Length: 85
Image (cartoon, rainbow, N blue to C red; front, side):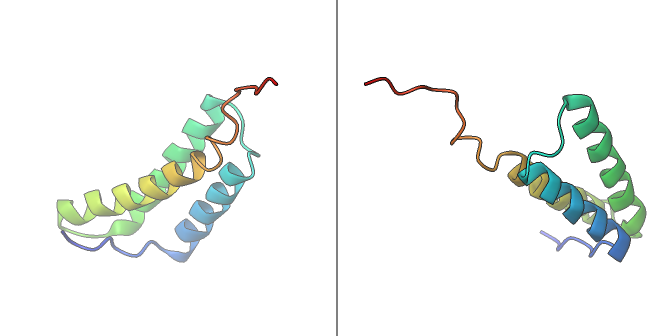
């Protein structure tokens, strides 16, 4: 499979800032998360500048994988289960 095209500096900064905010749980609400995700993916697509659709898919999947990994950080630690003695 092809390597993901490198995103532009601005897109990388936006992506990293959002990943950090997700990990710190500073973003709340599905509407805010979905809007910011859509905005970042629009930047990724605009920066791809490739005639090959497969490269575009790889770039979107790579960004999505980073966002998914950030949103699941610590999810198992806060499952809501209470240990009773």
